[in-house]
Length: 323
Image (cartoon, rainbow, N blue to C red; front, side, top):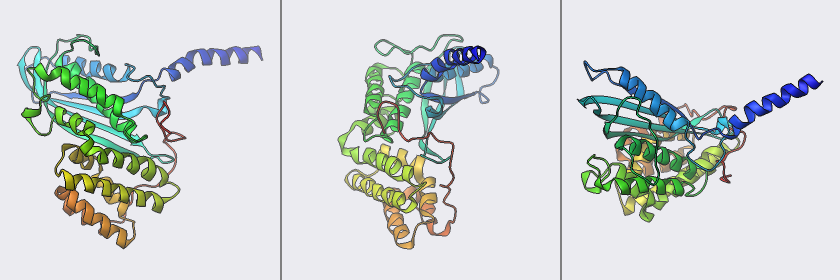
């Protein structure tokens, strides 16, 4: 009996701290350099490892995440140009997903390709983010997207719950206004890191953030038990997007929403009743005309892709009270 008790205490000592200190991200990282010829490929393997550690081993919030609550995300970097032995250009694709309550389904929250990836990196140079000090452009980009992923994730569990993280991303943008690298300034493009966080923090687009909350927490999260009710809430969330679109069409934040959600919307409403399908298609074609052909096929599709149980956390919510 004593041996069993000692074994139990040993497991508690070993495993509980790891559970309590579980970080926020379960992030897969890939750095591809096929387009760069005749260079030291080891540096990119080291960079990949360092970025993995940067996302997965740093504590980004004051909340406690259990292992199954960690945010599933991908960071894919493609190096296209070697400027010098320690200077590189390319693009970074950022993807994140959110589990849906009582299902094995994960909903895409962000799927964005940033073509302004211009960095200096010396192999084995530690990637440590200094929130109040000066950082390299590489570290600023990585920290910026870490906070953006957190912001969208928390927004989906609580109305504007991601604001503290978007504010941190905004702080990085503000500090980068004197940077020699592109992607941080308003005049460079209408769709870059500056405008992403500007749209999120701009009250004129607050309807999009409200829609994100309704869509996920009040819509998808109830569909395992109440399919029609959840789908109706999702349909109503589109009206919030429609109001924003009519006030300010073509916003960057709206594009990001549909880059993540267009295929999912087709699946959700493919099993809806005809009247609801017609209303939804009309709204979607108006506010996301680039995907009109996709939405017009909603009535033809028979695969809703939203069923199944098990796999997601036992109760929806983010640590820190977003229940």
